[in-house]
Structure formats: C-alpha cells, structure tokens
Length: 262
Image (cartoon, rainbow, N blue to C red; front, side, top):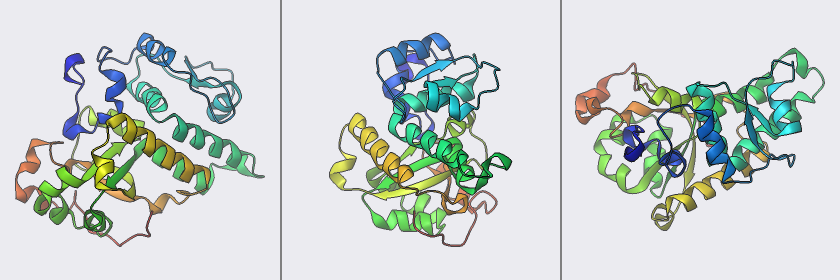
C-alpha cells in the first residue's frame, strides 16, 4: 500500500490492498466509481451493486440495497468509504449480511427494534475480523484470553501461522489512528499451512465464501459469541508492543470467560 500512501499497521489493511494500491489516500467517490467499474458485483437479490449519495427519501438503508443494489455512501466520509471497500473486497459476505437483515426485518414485530440477530450482524459488519491459523494452539490461546502468551511468547509463530482479515469498516476507520483498547470481534477458522502460502486473492475469495456461507446458514447470530481480539496486541500494529511489559496492561488485555466456539 505504500505506493499510494495508505497506512497498514501490522498489515491489517491487507484485505483492501488489491483495491487501494492504485487510488489516492482519500475517501473519494471517483475512486469508488473506478474500482466498482472493474467488477460486476451483485447483491443476493440479483441487483447490480452501486454506491450512491444519501437520498433522504425514507427508504431503509438495508432495504434499498436489497431492492435496488444501492449502497448509500456519504461523500468524503471515511466510515462509508471503508464500507464500500469492504463490499468490493468481500461481496458474498456483505450480500449475505444484507439478505439476513432483510429477512429479519420481515419477522412480525421487527419494526419495534433491531433484535438480537440484527445486533449481531451489525456488530460484525462494523467491527468484525476473520482470524485463520494453521496452528490450533494459537486459536486456543485466543479463545482462552491468554494474550501475553499469544502475542509475546508465541510472536514468531503468529507471523508463521496466523492471519487476520479485517472485515469491519468501523475497525478500518479506527486503524487510521489506532488507540489503546481497540478491539475487534473475531470469527476463527483453522486452515492448512498450504492455505497460508496461497496468493492473497485466493485467500480473500475463500474467506469470503466461508463467511458468506456461515451467515446465510444463520450462524453468528449471537452478539456475545464473537471472540474479542485486542488489535494493538498484534505485532506491528503499534511500536509500543515490542516490549513484553506492554502486555501486562490488564485494562487492554483482559482475562475473560471462555466463550463458545465460533
């Protein structure tokens, strides 16, 4: 990403790199038009995807995407810009999330509140990350909140056997200026060593297919079931974590109950 000035603390912007290397470092509508013109992406309802300015006509955000393929995107807005980039990077998963939102909205009484399902979908849409590893012991450390062991004692193993694919557009926006306590909501997958050596484009496509299938099957419907991942613990996200004492910060690297497997 360096050729166009994009930051990438700890390599966490990698999922967007196939798109952003050729555009300016700015939330620019023209860049989105350029990127989306290269692709023929469709929603789960079969509508061609497009990014439009907010319309103010009272049509629900998710329903507009489902019925028209139009993603309302505020101009010069990083949050919405990253949302559009995630649509372009993980189109199957974003389409599946949209379809689940629309399905949940059709349930009687849904108009009185978003509900648990939609809360979970929104949490992951905003702050989700897919963590893949060929070493199940690393995933076990993450599940059991063993942060210092994971991030410091197993530091070399992280580089060898674990990857994080940020999905949440709010998280991408926050990574522009990472702050103490920045935490993502993780879904975990075990993969083979060969998977980790595949080209990035193949990894992204597989992650997208996996996540879309899980969402369509009704998984990830419990907001409390995602695994918290303190992103500033990952090597390279902040220079401060190059010291073992950094991981003694119990406010940032909190112990917690083991949660159910996701």
